[in-house]
Length: 320
Image (tube, rainbow, N blue to C red):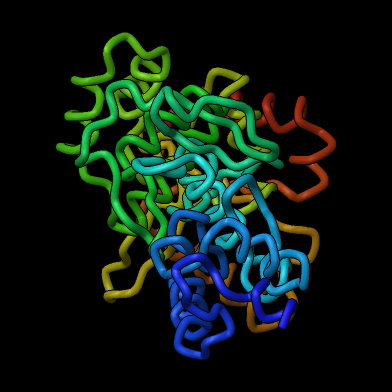
């Protein structure tokens, strides 16, 4: 029959054969729903049978030579995997895309960052390609079956594509997740070869104790910005201060020499009476240890930065 010949590749294998369908499904399942043309050929299909499957909706073209299996509704990891397959062997996600994969608090752009060899550097929609120059085998690992630049290399890439504050927070996130290997970072910096992100990353790691500038919300970010703009950056952020009885308190912003703790309160910081009482008891225990505690409200921090700066300056000018 005429129709049957369309479903049979030159090698004679029937593409409707259930074992072949299962093999394609298993391959796609391990790759977040996508497959590459070369992989389909290795399983027994040829170009014409692939076109037939596209025509009937069994495969959906994502990039040239890359297809989603069954449907085109891909997860973020599916789109990322499709981008890697589109860029060929040795490709890996990098920069902001890798930072998202490492959960470093970096916002992903509308495109997918991929580091790949020079031979793949033709334009592909939705993909931003970066040169693989200087990328060593140890700079790439597999996360969720996705080739990803290692954390140290990711931080170097982020240093060229993010603000200094974003980089600080990324380093802090890595530290709090116990992912940061300073030896690996030193190795990457030693091989950076003049990349403009290298001195930025080195400066951040040298000037800020990793983990000391991590903040939890927009309000703390805003206070930290005011303090830095005033020339009065805190010695530590979210520092745990132990109490003699074995308890303790996490202080928002700590100035050790002046024995001053600055706290920022949200719009509705005391949802219960118990919370109100606990905060006051906490401040009293800190005072017994010789700390002065000053609280700034959400409105002051967000709408009266001049007042906050002046008050902070005056308080730090007074010796304890």
